[in-house]
Image (cartoon, rainbow over all chains, first blue to last red; front, side, top):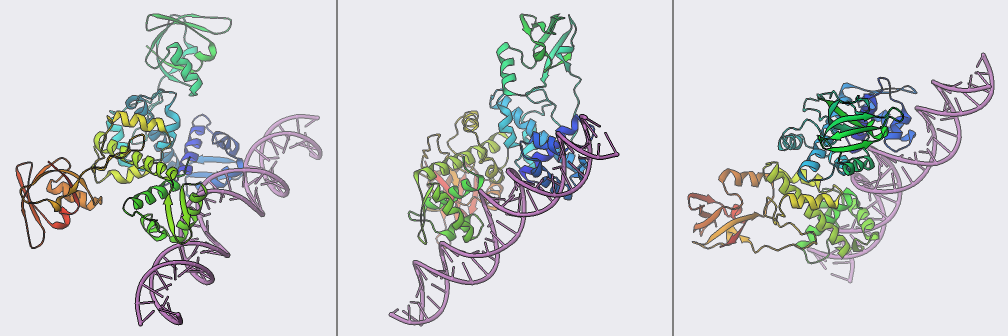
Length: 219
Length: 219
DNA sequence: TATTATTTTTAGAGTAACCTAAAAATTTAT
DNA sequence: ATAAATTTTTAGGTTACTCTAAAAATAATA
């Protein structure tokens, strides 16, 4: 079994690895985990001793298969709990993260299997992120940014890039939530802002900044 | 906010206080928490500094109102989670304790309120123990021991004294679970063993040892 | 009551995770 | 390529919780 902290380090390194393709450096880990570089070095040594990652001094780290497996399991737990909180307990999608951050560390494989079944084996969490399977497979979604859509294109609102509470609450406010059908009416050449028709009804005007943080699935 | 460990100490002391009526001594706490007396003394000092209990050297401890409140909140969380695991995730009543022991420390008042509502405000957990209300009130059940029933008395199986997995599994096996209607057919004078009719159908023979660990509500 | 047994506390130390400050290595810029 | 800036590591220390062994206080017994 691995500690709460070890799991958090592995998850952080895993998420950084997703977009990096190269060794993850100490400072970026410290940054994500809101801790100091010296603390990261300490933990890295420990995780390296446990063969959860490959570490070369001054060269950063890479997860081993073993480390990656635990990281993905933790992501799976996190996203299943988020789904539970949202779908069953009716939490808003902006409220689920912090609680799932705690719940993801509960130790019981049977619990996760049963939760998965109770939720009817969901494929995505309330933010549209894919939920890894029990085997650790992650179906990668063919989503594109809303900002990349051309005029007259139709797409399904399917996820977000920014997961911050502020952004999610803003989307709630303008009614741009998961599952909404969006048709681009106009893309402003000057500032990249987008006008769209939501669910074939409501007209909506959003900035490029917002459009760049929304993932859609083209129909 | 209080730590995982502090909550466990408060809960342990609270449970010991329930049947004690006097100051709780160091060794009994160490016993319940499977730790050493020296560790208990350390933690007691800490909790005393935080005004969660009254402590006099060599004289044991008593919870303050503040300490009792936290203990009861922790019991409430534990029993709500047990109910969730049993009713929703279909865990057996012998499987819920250990997982609830972890879940009870998740920090979020809103979570517990929503869980309570999701479970439709249950009054008792899967073992028949009362679930404290949000206000910390605990309805005390007028249950008596099955071993105290006279011949021909009818009662509802409503709880257990022994919460061990072995005992609960045994009850599952003989079909003596919560809600079963029991009518005492015969009480053996020699060894106190009891013969009963369950749900007006099945005849059952149980030892006094078992009867003394079953709580019933007389009809 | 004096002695013995038991319980509780203190003293000193270990582990996990964190920190600051300084040293060492690496990278960037002149 | 050397100096300057940045990053990373080491050294030493803190906190929360744990332990063993010894000392002190209380309770039990002769």
